Image 1: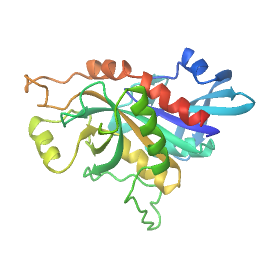
Image 2: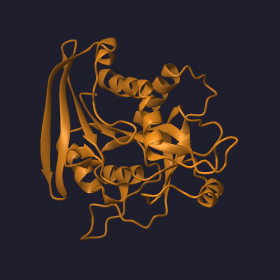
Image 3: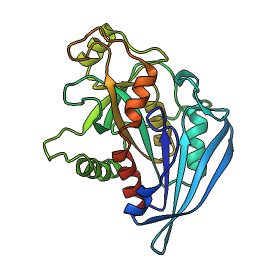
Image 4: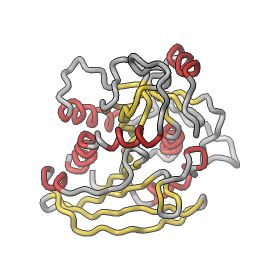
Length: 262
């Protein structure tokens, strides 16, 4: 891929690549901070110009919680239309979103990095570019199958998982900004949700409307409410959730750099 967009959240605060570039044969030529104007608001992007042998590559990073220079915008206040439009206007061939999630099933323990292959959104919050005329977009398969196949191979290799390790889960979109109750997690489990978060499906819907290839790499940062082994009453804390996700970035770096060099 020549031009890759990467969206970071609480699991990827900024783009501070170093030695990871060299291991993939990449060299940083130039790095710029730019602001893209869209009809939905201004969006700050980090644009990295790279070389891979004789080929030029571009990595465009967006912090989804951008908030006047700080990654602190609450999830229910994010203008996803501005974010996705900015990446589309920047000419990205595909987008890899990085998400920090609370995990429900036993085979998705904190620290594991996997992929979303479906989502469930019962929030009732619209996420569309089509407010003036009825346009109905198919999201039967909401994530790009080619991106997911490439990312699955990298995640298996980077985490030493064998072919039997489960790598695809269903993301349940919670409204936020509060974490879920134990009762809500039990209900989500029964309805087919495997991980909970507050943002990603809204991006996926907008990317599909623009025919922009999109995939979500999900870091299990914590057990969902009531699922902590041995302590079902364990409180969730935003800072500890974020720090766990940021300790598991090696597979994430491997994913984005493999997409750029493949």
